[in-house]
Length: 177
Image 1: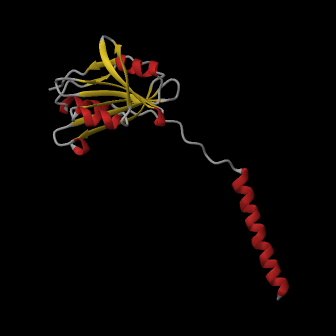
Image 2: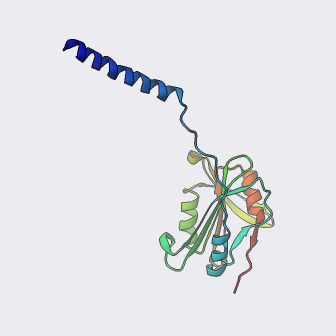
Image 3: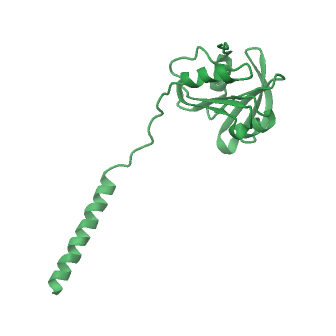
């Protein structure tokens, strides 16, 4: 009887050791590389629905990969709002996002910049952008608000040169009937 218990205990211990070897020997998978996405459907819908002069990037190099897009109508920004988010993996492997909406400018900017600290404004392609930084998150942000009632935010952990490049690429989208 004692031999049987001892053999069972040794067998269980052997299984645990084998499992430990497998866990240690096989490396854990790393986070997957961002997968490029198409944002054409969101852009087409934005063109039809936006009650403001929507903008989109034009002429960015192929090394800028779109990795996320989302269009919200109403929702958290309130009834009658249209909000578009377009995320890019930059050539340096960082994130740069375009956020635009006709929602309340102050609340939207505060949320998109994570209540960043204001920096001196910067001119990009003849437009003066307000800048902010949120060091605890490694986030830099540039934003424009228009008297016509829309706001554009370029934000992410990308460096200032890349954020400026994204901002400089923005062009109005022609409305479709």
